[in-house]
Length: 200
Image (tube, rainbow, N blue to C red; front, side, top):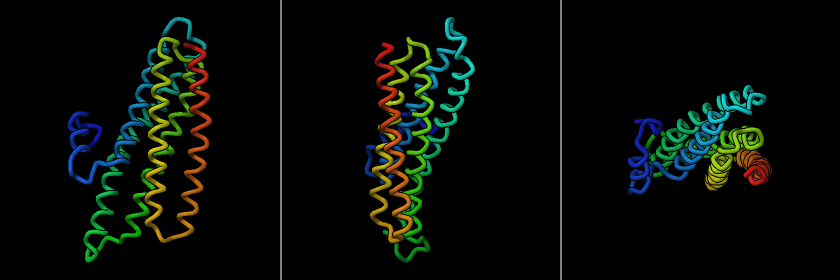
């Protein structure tokens, strides 16, 4: 069963079990998906609402972006669990055909994409915080905060996984990339926070 189809209580019980997966990367992706869903909801509460006709087209586009991010993040939760299982197999069973270094690279690349997708959520959230329905501004901010937390968690996971990789060029490039993602996220999240606070 995919994460998208799994009841939330069952997913959390699996997280809280002795099983290796789902773990931090998958949980971060689900948190990011929840953030995207909240921002998507704010768009739906804006489109067609009196007084917001001038921004309707922009909010329709934003809603579609959030929906795409939500779906991608749920898929990334599954990809992260698979990547962690692959690493576990590679290091626990050296006689297997799994290459530990290749597995570790995938385990770094998946949360990096999760972070990038969460940054896309924050990009779109700026417009919703500014132009969206004032009655849903707290939902927009909450969605952005969740996406921001998921992004930071994913970046931390990337950095942890880079510690196991021998390819110096890959490590340097990936570290620089996630540093940039984190800086961009901090700026966007602060703008959302300030704008949302002003519209309370």
